[in-house]
Image (cartoon, rainbow, N blue to C red):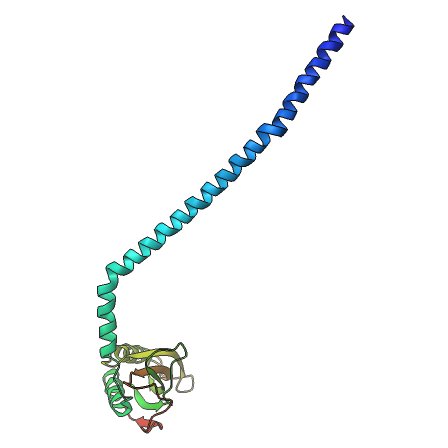
Length: 205
C-alpha cells in the first residue's frame, strides 16, 4: 500500500508540475497578450475620446464663427487708424463730468507695439482723479462703454483726506487708473507718434 501511495503521490506531483509548466509556457504569455491588448484598446479609446472632443470644439468654433466675426467687426470699429489722443482726452473729460469726479489728470504714454504682437499699436494712459467709491465705479463703467476701446489694467485708490471726516459723509478717494488705448495704422506699426503725449490736467467738476 505504501508503494501505491508513493506512486499516486509521484503521479499527482507530476500532474501538478505539468500544470505549472503549462501555465508558464501557454497561459501566462496568453494573459500577457490579453493585458497588452486591453491596454492598447484603452489607449485607442482614450485617443478616440480626445478626437471626438477636438471635433466638438471645432464644431463649436464653426457654429460660433458668425458671432465671433461680428464681435471682431465691432471691436475694429472702436480702434481708430491714428492715436487721436486729443479726442480721447475730450471723451474722458466728458466721462468725468458725467460721473462727478474732480481733479482729473490724463497722462498718455508713448505708443508702441503690443507685447503679444499684432497689427495695432498700444498707447498706455494713466488717469487720476478724486471722487467717492460710487463715482469711481460709475467712471470706470462709462470708460468701458466709450466709443473707443479702452482696456483698464489696474485701478488703485486711497483716501484723499485725513481720517476723522464728518459722520455720514462718504469719504473722498484719490484714484489712479492705468489703462491702454489702441490704434491700427495702415502701414507698419510705429514706435512713436508726432502727437503731444504730455500730461493733461482738467477739472472734471
